[in-house]
Image (cartoon, rainbow over all chains, first blue to last red; front, top):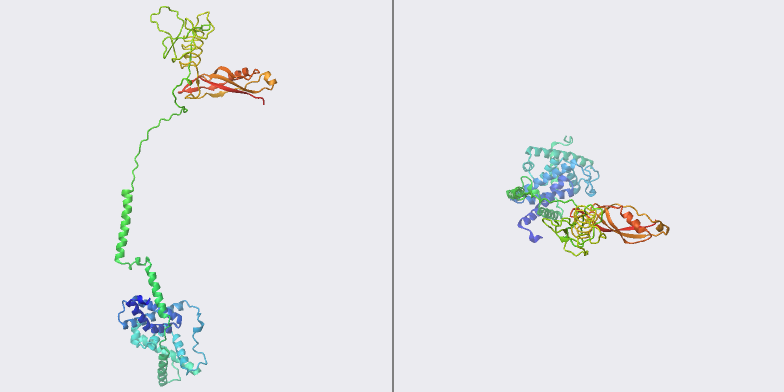
Length: 175
Length: 324
């Protein structure tokens, strides 16, 4: 099969190798579900293959991948909220944020707590947070990508941080 | 909403720590190893499905000008072919062909055959209303037509003598060696007579022949004019149809002896369907022959036909005497 790959196929393969982690992580943070995130990542890459001819530069591709992944993930979250599914994957059930007993100083435990706190945000602020802290994008870039004013982006960030702070402080105090 | 227990400095420190923790928590995760393979598989499957021709390309806005060109061309060609068949090629004019009128004959079918000597008959008869039976004599000359019927010559010196003839084919018949014309088999030799018939000629018949018949020939039968016999069914002659018959009576002798059997009677059915010349052909005895003749004499037929004319035919009747 590999021998018959054209140059486009090779380029697509390299792009997947380069960006699969980013696409999968964005989808995972927004969706909070590994299998759904993988499904979304597959869809995004298939869409990328169809659009490969139109996307020339690597920057363009990166920008396009982030944008499409965020939008597809938000769409999936909203669709799931309209039609809630019964969660069947018991191993991937998120731990409750307020669960006592988890050591605050334990780094993986803190990271997990924070991830779950971010996951509890509404989809759009959650996406903003993901782009800000996972992809290290500036509010301007986030605003351009999500077609929203920079002020809105900043407002989302501040409100999310405040919410996290309150929840985190409560967790810390309980701990 | 801020925690009242935290002052601004504490909040900033906390946020900085929180942001650091967020950066660490939100680090990218490795994608599942199977992700690329699954994308490739789905892509190949989609390409193979796309290779199957579908009507998707015909949806509005998607199809190309080239597709439109071929589509319009194909439809126009099909419509032109249909129009060609409907308006030019497919029309079949039906011409009315006058059928020859068939003359339907409703008469019963009788095969037309040439008259044969055996099958044909005829006869003649005549007379001059005399009480005495026709005298014995020799037969007149046979001819195919008759101008003068045979008669007793009462004018010895006629102005225009014409020999008497009967309409007969040139055949030999038993004749009598007599000086005058008469009936060869007549027992009456004492008186010159033409017999009780009518229309000149000799005998008991009519129409200028010799014998008991009705015509210008000789013998029984009628209208034929030639030959001495009668026709038989077949060879163009339809058989007579029996219209009326009676059961024969038993004679006392036969009844006493409980005698039974058949008696064959020959007869001639004349042109009116009446039996004449009834004779016993095969005798049975014990007085039953007479009873058979008596019964057959009462029969009535629809006459036989030859060429659409009723004719006399000879036939046989089997009379069955049976004790039930």
